[in-house]
Image (cartoon, rainbow, N blue to C red; front, side, top):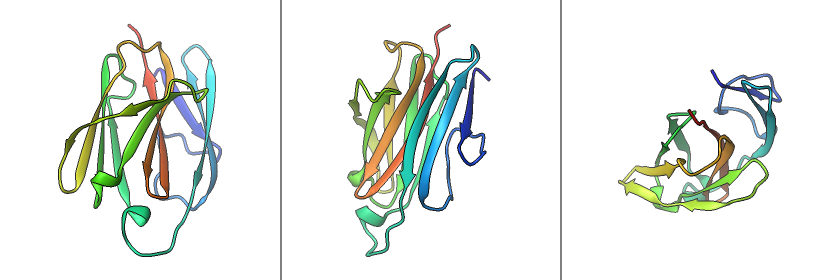
Length: 140
């Protein structure tokens, strides 16, 4: 694989799921040994069920991407979701616009053809919930 992921807890996957609240960081390394680091905080909220307390399931494919990627989010409140794409320096923030929305699913097409090769972060927000997924952009 051209990109390798390593979280500060030793997990070597492109995303974290089912982990306890806390501070996490991921180091992404490409085949040339170039690295980028991103930090995130997983928080736990107690309260009424709703957009601020919803559970979301994320699916990002293909990753790495050459021309485009698709982010699909399954949740009880898809209308409460916003998503942004940033580079690893937090620059070039672009709000992603939904392609399709159903009662429990929202989908985003992410065009990457005009982006330089590298690692980007997709930041997903819903109420108090923030999730971050790395997206690797490759050039042939």
